[in-house]
Image (tube, rainbow, N blue to C red; front, side):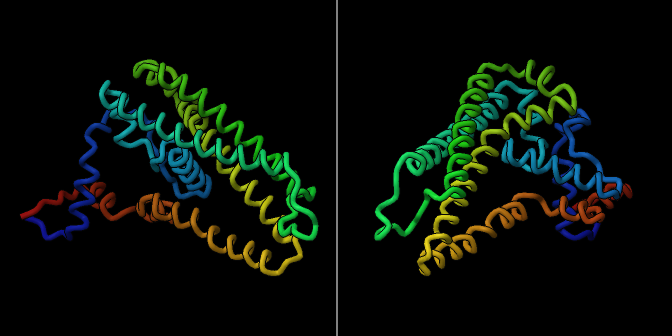
Length: 253
């Protein structure tokens, strides 16, 4: 009988749970940290790539099990295609909005509170339009290819090496990345137009919008990535890993 804290017990059970990961290839796993800054950057980049491409901080059980079972593979493929379909809908809205700013003139100068035809705003609107179109096209192409992929070909070809795996994840992340860039460019165009309007309450609204949204991605990343990762990034191993490496076994009475 052991008096180890319940937190360590649950962590140990979580680490023992994925027996399905025993045969997972090393190139599917998160890179190991050797204490150097380069290894920490590689770990952070891999987590970010997984988060953007498959909405999970690592490949772990979900993606690996999907390559071993036809039922799980169909579930995984449906999740990816649904995510890309939602991304395509959002990209279509951004594409339409940026096209409106590119093809219409603002009201007369007496009524114009948002001069979005200035050079800087127009450039960002063009960038938003191009990125939104790229997001839609890449999303449609990935859906067409992914729906026709079978489980064995995906495992043996697309993800057979670390390089191919990362390239596949980058391709899956392209629609989301392009959509984010498109939205940021459109927001930048509107913010520049608001700041150059010369109207104090429009400028105040622009600053308030920036203050309201700038913290969201930072908090999302902090909440989406497990705490163990931040501990490893800081050079500390999680407590349950130390226990397992020391050969400790946590049991309950």
